Amino acid sequence: MTLPENPSNAGVVAERHGHMGLLRLNRPQALNALDLQGVRVMTEALRAWAADPGIVGVVLRGATADGRPPALCAGGDLKFFHRAALAGDPALDAFFTEEYELNHLIHGYAKPYVALMDGIVMGGGMGISQGARWRVVTERSVLAMPETNIGLFPDVGGGWFLARCPGRIGEYLALTGQALHAADAIACGLADLRVDADELPELGARLLAARDEQQIEQLLRSAARPADGASLAQRRETLDRHFSQPDIASLLDSLQRDADEFAQATLQLLRQRSPLMLGVALEQVRRARTMALADELRMERDIMFHCFHPGGGGHGDAVEGIRALVIDKDRRPRWNPARLEDLDPSAVAGYFVSPWAPAEHPLAHLRDA
Image (cartoon, rainbow, N blue to C red; front, side):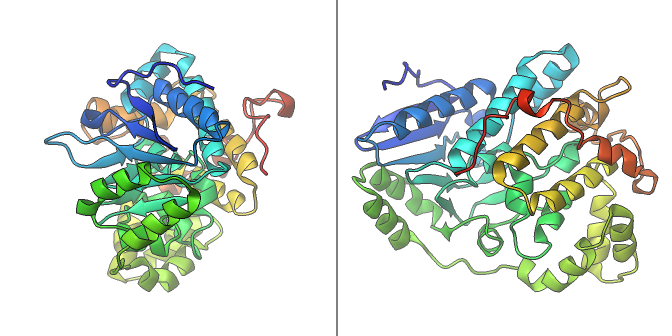
């Protein structure tokens, strides 16, 4: 199978290097934010390389630009989300359906898929990395699922991979959107090894010259460096106690009664997030803990439908959160409800009702191996 012509200025560039495929996210001025065309380029390339016996592995990396911080991918194109939601553009629904298909494809990919997670890796960037066989971080890596800050929830399989973090760390990360650096990412099971950022160009070149799976593994293991300084592990008892509470109200009460500085800082952070999406994210992670990936992605697609097609008119917290953070940049979102204390559990439950019959679900075809 031959890939179509892929111009060097495309948002994602797919290239063959000997026996390796390279996916290069190519929008450094936008921190390599992922758009629909980029999703399609990645999907087509991965499917072609999976069927090509001459390809032994794939490397994912992000382009860089002077004056911009390093990033693999900072997430989806939020300006497009806002514009498409207000216009009723069907491309928005297509984006989420195809993005989740891509996430599922990566998790089940039969050949070594190496995600070089240097710099910022958030939201959609995590979605195209967490299914990798090798998740490589550096001292510059900043990993997060910060969606509750913009009126969304940790999608792209976020419920599934956060639910598999130790203890209740997944609930903590899902609700707060707290960023992780290399040591904590590895300790939480969200990265596999750390390399030095200044060695990454040479490592990338050597990976693209690899001829088999064994060589890929040898190159990565030989480049690995110690990842010291994990701090979340020291908070396990606190996190497990508070984030194992049965619902948001109980969780808030638990934090409120804890005079510890960390607990109080966490409480204040949660009060800045969308109350509705905190409830949704907590329920999502709890359900995902016992779900297969394909089922979890179908659940996420249901939730995302409700985020941008809320009942009762209006556009909901997603459009409002993006407006406040990205469009107007006033950082004063008008959440509905405004306070966690006013969150109605029935409103949360509505996000888990699928708008599709099972056979008509846009991700009905997904199957786990």
